[in-house]
Image 1 (cartoon, one colour):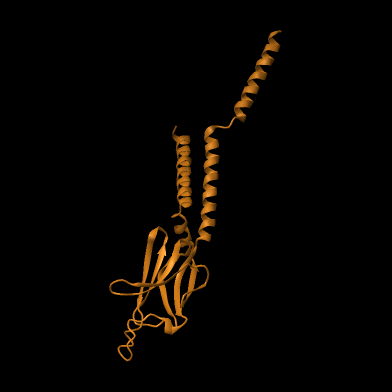
Image 2 (tube, rainbow, N blue to C red; image 1 turned 60 degrees about the vertical axis):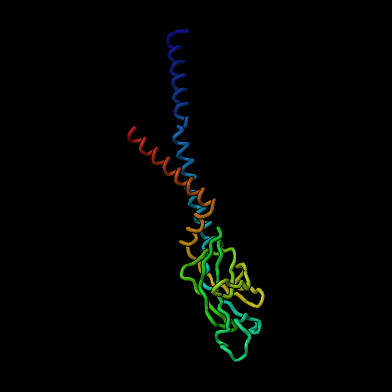
Length: 205
């Protein structure tokens, strides 16, 4: 084999090595692709789940179906009949054994309907039950407890009418309280950190 053939073979080998090096993908680029995918999936998941959890409870109306069955403080005729009317109170129970007291309506019948309006929306997805009770100075008497399964729910002698509103902010906050939301938040944060490290290493290392 003469020197020309050897030179030709060496050139082919060097060209092949250069081609392999060109085709090889750096680990940082793979990591960047993975991080970019994680970020996109996180944002998309956040939007979808936020929409699903954006419904919040704004108002509750309770109506007694039969006034004769409403609780009374006493049954004495002609004696303080106004004070004998029930003191209805609403408790909203949410996940984690938390509860929100919407206050009482002293000495009022629910025959014509009593309305409680919430100052701040509570995510419907986090509400475990709505409790109606007759307030007492010592121990309040629980009357009925219902779940929000629709716009109106009937339990015992009472009908509950629920008014809800949709809020994007509420949906996002509610979503990130869930384990899935927290996991996505962590993955999103780590992806951002890795991308920033890659960016600074490119310029300063």
